[in-house]
Image (cartoon, rainbow, N blue to C red; front, side):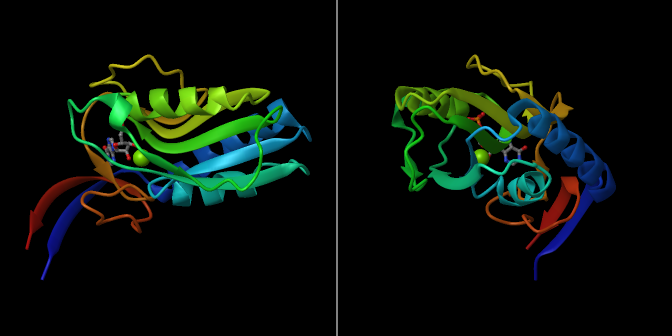
Length: 177
Ligand code: IMP
Ligand code: MG
């Protein structure tokens, strides 16, 4: 049996308040202009579903994409993603919604791919903007929380696919199998 000890870092109350603030900020920027909000699976799924429900935009569509994970030091050119938007993003505003920006390689790659498709604009929302290992130049337009160091789980974020359903964002203190 898996025994886990986790310590909440950002509680569900803190998250709810912060995500509502981001939704309001995003609503004010786009108003009713055509917008495609794109969830980067799987990590952003819970953040995305809370965030988009607070965005007031009558012309917003939802898209989903899956990026393959990769280890430290791997060539960013080898990042793969599955694009299942089902719609042309040309001349539309695109809002990428990601869980964590860490080294920045994933989002640097994805933002370039999105720009090639000639959207009207592309912005990035990330639940957590981590700084310790930042390597690629990525601007996070809407950041939920800043974190200088550490590995976090919960509210969609995983460690080897575990802990995604925790309501709080937590630090893992001990795992016994
Ligand atoms: P990158 O290093 O910015 O390319 O981030 C790669 C991916 O690693 C992110 O999209 C997250 O899914 C994952 N990741 C990075 N740091 C954490 C963490 O602290 N918890 C869970 N996932 C993380
Ligand atoms: Mg991710």
